[in-house]
Amino acid sequence: MSVYVGNLSYEVTEEALNEVFTEYGSVKRVQLPVDRETGRVRGFAFVEMSSEAEELAAIDALDGAEWMGRDLRVNKAKPKSEGGSFGGRRGNNGGGYSRRY
Image (tube, rainbow, N blue to C red; front, side, top):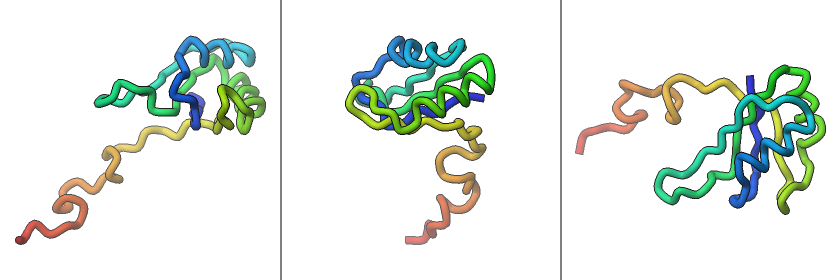
C-alpha cells in the first residue's frame, strides 16, 4: 500500500519528499507524476513506506501540515481502478454518446 500526497508545490522533488517522509520511517519508493505535455510536476505524489504503521504515522503528522507554502493532503492511496479514467465505460459508444450525426 502507499500514501497519496496532494496539493504539492510544483517545485517539489522526489528527494525532498523522500527526506520529509523518512522522518516517519523507511521510504521504499516515491512516485512524482509529471505532465506528459508540459513536463511539469502534476501536484501530487505517491510514497510507499516499509510498513502500515509508518504510513499511518506519516499521514497523522503530515495531513493538513504546511510545506513549501501549501497545506498538504495526505491519506491512504486508493487502489488504481480498472477501466482507466472513464470509469470503465468501454463498449458504451464513447461513454453513452450517440454516434449518429
